[in-house]
Image 1 (cartoon, rainbow, N blue to C red):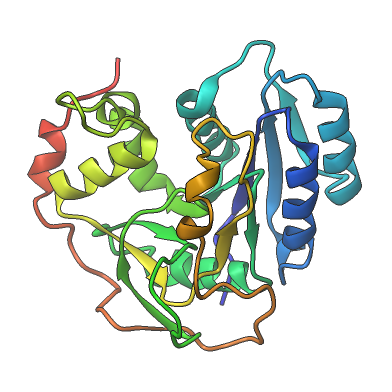
Image 2: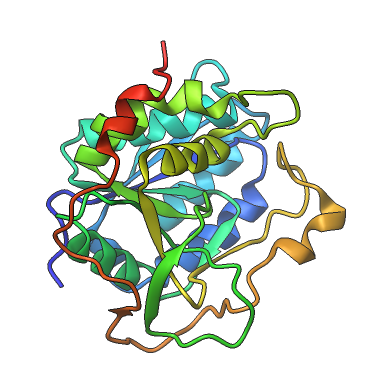
Amino acid sequence: MTLPDGAAIVFTVSGERPGYLAETLASWRRARGVGRWRTAFLVEPGTRVPDCRAVIDGAFPDAEVVVHPERRGVLANPHAALTHGFAGGAAFVVLAEEDIVVADDVLEFLTWAATTCRDDPSVLAACAFSRLPAPQPSDLVTDGEFSPWVWGTWADRWHDVLDPTWFAAARAPEPGGGNGFDFGIARTLAATGRRVVIPRASRSDDIGQYGGVHAVPAEYEAGRAATFVAHRPPVRFRATDPVGVRGAPRDEAAARLPSSP
């Protein structure tokens, strides 16, 4: 399939964990077609920025690297990463993290999704992670829950839906609710009737057991993908749910979502 114009992968990096970053970028270097994507890294001002820069330069020597002068945090830095990707003219941007490894066909799935769902505004995002139990067919794509562990979206859905509501939706509307952009996107999906597509067999997995802002080491194994494998031969992806040209239901609900200041 043809890659969307100027498609980009933007990585968020804590500046603290070069070991995880090295393992993650090694998996991305094995991803088929990665050289066709523009890559950028938004790095927080952590204590090991030089080590992280060395890892990035070794894996992606031509990538753009931005080191923030002040820490943005786990809500603002992903927003900055997506803003950066779309500001460069990308039609589709993938958000990646320093401690999420990918299968070598992850970009084949994301290219399929970016192309197949491009004109279907009911699809808000394509997510590489699946928490479905094993075994799963390697070629099936289905509607699923949103996961921040490698995902992409389109310029129109970023500008019209996600960017205006990013910060406000991430705040829990009542005590005890989840805070964070992943919770915010889940609330946006519910409010607008949109959906995400995922591969039934996961194309990403978490390796960040220690040192993450939200990492809970005791819960690490339970959260990993049961269907993830690093190498998969090429497949012809096919959807179990209709995708294509389709209006987004309850579009009027987007206007009722709280807008970020």
